[in-house]
Each structure stands twice: as C-alpha cells, then as structure tokens.
Image 1 (tube, rainbow, N blue to C red):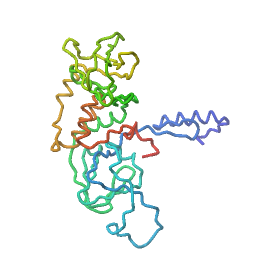
Image 2: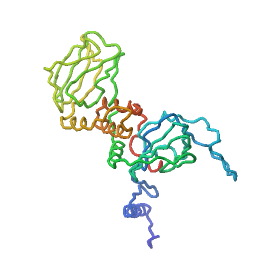
Image 3: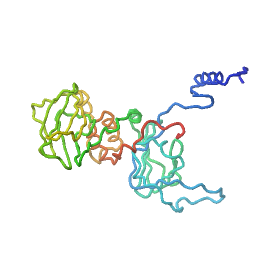
Image 4: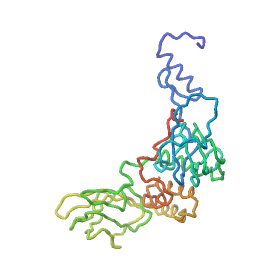
Length: 323
C-alpha cells in the first residue's frame, strides 16, 4: 500500500495519522477514528399539545402498504418529558412523532435559517439530520436571524458548575434567592428563604477578599439590606447562614453583574407574554442562562414551558456516533 512495505505497526500508525491530518480527520491509534463535532443540523425548540414519541418495531418486508392514518399508535414516550432546546440528532434515529389535532413540533434549521412548524394531525419520522412527514401537512416555514444559531451553539458548549442555579437547602430550610452561583442584574440584593427558618440565625456576607462584608439578623423569610450595605456593580460574594449559637447551616455565592453587562441584557428584555414569539423568548433565555442570570432565566423558561431540570439538558455536542 502506497508503494511502501512497513514492518512496524507503530510506523503504520504514524503514517495513517499524518494522512488523516491531510484529509481533515485524526486517527487515534491504528484503525480508530474520531470526527470533529459539527454544529447541529436541526434544533427541536418547541412541542405544543401532547404528541407521542414512539419507536416502531422492525417489521418484516411486505408488499402491501401500511395505512399510517389507520395504524394503531402503540404506547410510547410522552413528549412532555423531553427538554428544549435540543439538537435533533440527540433523539434516537427512527423514532416517530405522532401529532394529534392541535399538536405541533417546531424545529430550527441552521442551513436555511428557518423555523419549521409541523402541525397535526400527522406523523413525523426522525431521520439522521432532519424530520420527514410520513403523513399530514408539510411544515410552515419562517425566516429567523442567523445570530440565533450562534446563541444556540454557544449555549450547547456552555456549562455551569454542578450546584449552579439551585436553591441551597439544609435542615428543612431553602434559600430561594439568590440561587446559588447566580449573577444579579441589580444592586438591590435580597434573600428569600422558605421552610424551617431557625430563630436567631444570621446571614453573613464575605467579599472577594474573604473578609466579612456584612452581617444581618434573620427575622423572617425575606432578608433585605439597608442602603448602608452599599452593594456595587461587579462585586462577588460568598454567603453563610449561621445559628446565633454557632454552627453553619448553609453556604453559597452570588455576584452582581458589571453595570455595562446588566444594562445590555436588560435593554434586550422582551415582554413576558404569550404574544411574544416563543423562539425570541427562548434565545433571550439562553443568553441569560449562559451568564448565570438564573432568576430572569427561570421567568422566561417558565413562560415558554422549557424544563427547569438541568440534568435533562444537552451537555456538549452529540458524538459522531449519534449523528
């Protein structure tokens, strides 16, 4: 091969690796290849109604055609359990989506910068890089800005620390605000507690230098600070809730955004209304999530019905084997 007889297995691996670089791929070890991740070819961003997601069994070849409209729909996965936004390739190939009347599925297609809305009744099949209509109407197609896909790709590659965006809980008490690791878009800091808030407990704030910044007695579920606390833009804090008699109950952190960033994000704020396009709210919510503005993110995601369960969100790009 190539006119050269190589006696060493290791030398063969080196030559193949070099050839792989020339042709745009890398071989890790002889005969094992990995393909660089590519941007998703389609995004699942919205499901309305309650379609079913099913994986049809393999059928024996038959000359007779199956009437898909009359075919019995077997029990399947409720699409309400799916997270949005989700690269379409993250769904198993071969799955079918059964749409009843008033059900719909919305995809974003980067190659054409379009939004496609599939409405029921109908039946769709998830292919390698797209959805095909097995029966029913063809999708309605709408243009969307190319920048939306830049945001989706950036969000797919973004990740938070494991406990970011959660309400810290301890001994029957929850800290609902600020959510752990959150970025505040305001200098008006307020803690909201729930559950069993112990009497005579105190909230202690530490600045980025580790020194005590403020101590506030907790007298109820809402903890506000006087003006003398003097919170400023760009500050980061660690907080502790301690019993007066000693012993730490909970610990977390938050930050106040730089004034320019807060102003930029708030200037892009959209009306939280059903009349605001779903895709516009989704993109705005993803921008908020990436910077850690979790409270504003949850307001948006709650309105559009996007799951708050971060464990079900896509993490990184799907591998080549799922495409």
